[in-house]
Length: 139
Length: 400
Image 1 (spheres, chains in turn yellow, green):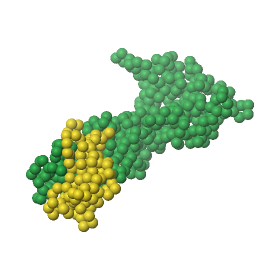
Image 2 (image 1 turned 45 degrees about the horizontal axis):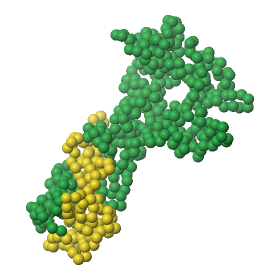
Image 3 (image 1 turned 60 degrees about the horizontal axis):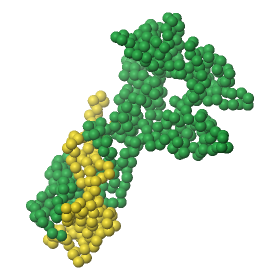
Image 4 (image 1 turned 90 degrees about the horizontal axis):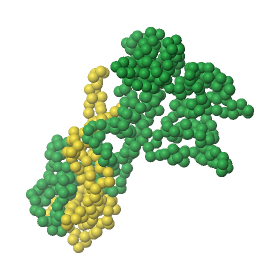
């Protein structure tokens, strides 16, 4: 069986995806477990002209930097398609793989989170993000 | 943290993360369509392989029961999943038309800054490891139904053959479907086992039949006083055809036992029969029935090879083994071409044949092993135990 890996983007124009990587797991308050969609995780900040970043999740602040991946990563998408078999006149499900993006950098956070105990909420104080800000970082 | 930039509520893609300006911030949120998205896979790829992906020269090959391999035009890679305990938030670029029908829903109502959405938390990524092509299956498949003299004489063409037979025959496309190797490696594999394409199917020719054709070729050479070092392709082939052999097989005989000397100017090519290949063929023929006493064997071998060729026992390394039983030496056929091509199985078969090997005897049976990243010394280290009875004795290898 052979599965061709398709690519419709071409060499120079492969869309670039990004990775934000933290050590550990982001925990969401139980009441929001089933409604993750559109929930804010945190604030990504770049304080200066250096490639240093802070990521504030709930009342934890992580520090990290943008690094180039040692080897690029391709984002592949599995596509199930129906193949019409010419000879036997029946349809059989086939799988195709397609290159949908490339990743060359990630923002990596590998320090211990700093608890912002004196500043419980980093930015916006309205209700919507107050609920989201009850996300916390667990390592 | 000061937010210097007061933007309109905007949904931004990965670009906003990668190009985040100094003294600015963005909100990272779960995408409207956030989920496991098992259909999205991250694959680590060496920079130099990227063009093959972009130009669609890469495919996955294998049966459902096998571990899939990834093949470029010329190399084969196994695919390994490497997990991570980190949370890898994957953010797509802005244009999500590839992913979804609806454009990204932006939770911009209450915020005044850009939002970048995370579509998935990746559990890890796939890695590629270069491996030797899995060619043992090729020989197995083509040996299911070798091309024999019976087939040549009985069937004029494919139409006459029973469907139950043609089902066991394999075209190039069938082989690509079944064998886990890149196109180039598959072609080399076919060359290595002397396969020939007949009527669109790749075939191994039955040894007895090849022998018949070779003997007829040699017979004709004597009759017509042809030099075995300068055989005229057209003459040789047309005479074999008139003797009743198929055209394809007549050409194939030259390919199997000879080497092209030069392209004839405007005419036919010249071929030279390869002494080693011809002599090995006759040696194998003698030993097909079983082992023989060395003297006996050498005697018969000298008689069988064509005039002008000089059989030398050294030619048979990797083909024949010599054993001492008491005062007598006996030889039997043991061809490297019949052994498995994966190292573990190869050594296991070798040590079953003979528990201890001297290096000079062992080398011809392992030289062809191909393991990317492992040298011959490395292979010996990994799969054998080396002992040396005394300093000036030959090292001996046995199973680990």
